[in-house]
Image (cartoon, rainbow over all chains, first blue to last red; front, side):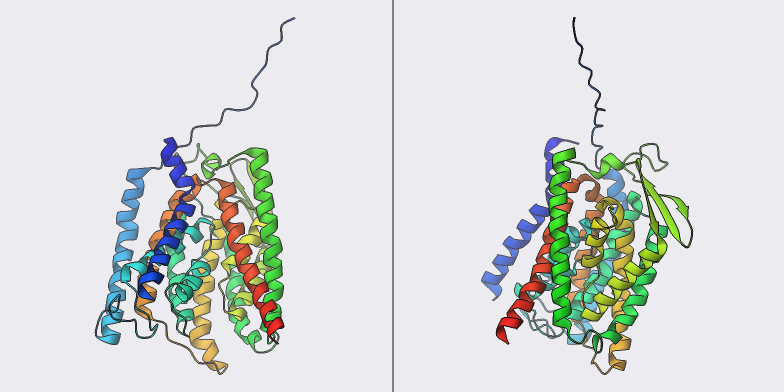
Length: 32
Length: 368
């Protein structure tokens, strides 16, 4: 598996959590 | 005299590719139909209950919040993904996110999350089954214990556990210590062995071919089970597994919380099972516990004088569709995520839950 793909999959939980935090913050800013 | 250095360490095999076409076929044949049914059911529930489709413009009536449908689905996806990676249902992330970010803070939030946590691990169950992280004999005793505990728990809510805050405090302390142990253990193991991934445990001679893990049952009787994966074996008492499931089931249903966040750390610390293997038992366990939770919510609680609160069905179904997909993705990616990162996530989630209970108790004590 290529290095980039391996790193993306390995750290995917943290990437997903970061995306969730960003979307959550945007939601609070616009829908509160 | 010349000296020769021999490299005796075995060469680490190259990490196999994610089998893309195979995963695509599995998604189209197995997951997509269920996803579409859940999304359709979400729209149908909203239409028949309210006569319109709630979302960003019109609030979900029971929840009382305006939130785009894609955001509810996304909540299911990310909570399902991160939690299924460590063998749990998505409730531990989805509940606080619903309350604090989506501002869904009324009584309907708990049953709505029950809809999500009941359906979402099914995606992981099907996915892990295909990946070979599957052993019904390992799961049977702990699941039976969970069902019994899930049905006994509500009866203890009013009696033995009437002082639930003190009990939560004890659970919180236990979780905090267990998670600290997990985090330290993850650090030690990483220093000792470096990054270990699930594909290192894959049985390359197995029938399933490359990329398929096999959790073998070496011996099984009603008293004991011996399992093996890769070069490792473990022997457990079925009675102790049953009692573990029973205890977790009682505590979880008495406190009205999911059981995964208690069972997974116990399996990691006391049973020394790697996350890649324990999902064979914990995912069936969280599904059975969620179903017994629904039974106790719908049938037992009204018998005890409590009122059954209706979930926000459409929101629960939309979130469940996302959760099912996220959990299935996790089952495909888990073998490629290093063990120390999985233990870091597990320790992080567990310590947050533990400290929450401890802080809540401390706040109550200071307030009184």
